[in-house]
Length: 135
Length: 125
Image (cartoon, rainbow over all chains, first blue to last red; front, side, top):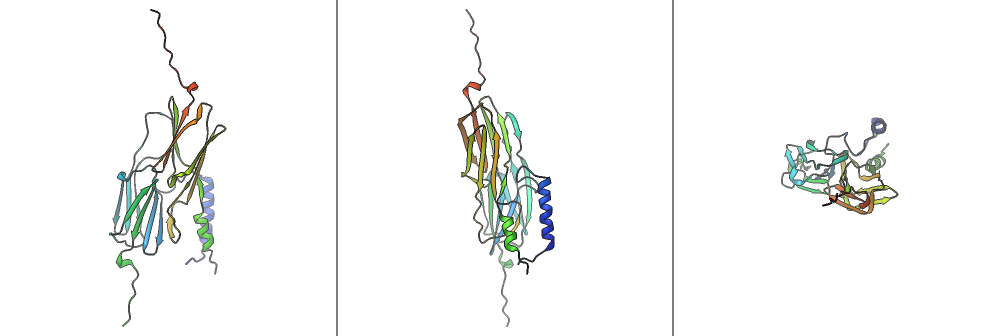
């Protein structure tokens, strides 16, 4: 449920000003790399992350308690050439995401395609809502 | 009750146009551009060369998220657009493009006429 909150409008206004004064060249870099999205669908949790230029072998995904940790290295593809522009970022990264509930360790699926990492997670049995019968 | 949810979720999920970051290098024969466009696909990218302008456009095709509720997001659904002014030295018929792991690599070849040419000196024996 959404309850109207006066401060949301203030925050929107603040974001508008921030965007205007600190316009970036891209989806970069006011958040820690990599950028993530968390979506919920019933008992499932879907995490999407932007990972351009990263190979599956250079990526590690771990679950510790109710946190998901994505770490890895984006390897530089620089060549010995005369560069006119270097805007891309390379290096090691690590990001920890706190999940809204504990998840089952059995049904985890991660796909990496076209620079997008998608992780499918499922609620663990003990965090699923349970109906209690009254005797 | 002021339930502006439809408005809020609409504005949050609206598409935004991003300028993809690029690396560019030059060699004797070509210019190479690498642009990061995560989520775009080979078919969603359009590359046009017209009147000394190279235009790159792309749409990110993320997994269908109808029926899902966004809990937290650091990015919006993206469209990509960036243009570069290019000189007369580029042969617009010879442009190669490759899309891999969300990175677009463009090779713009130079005209034969502008390539450096080595002149051999004939020695009179």
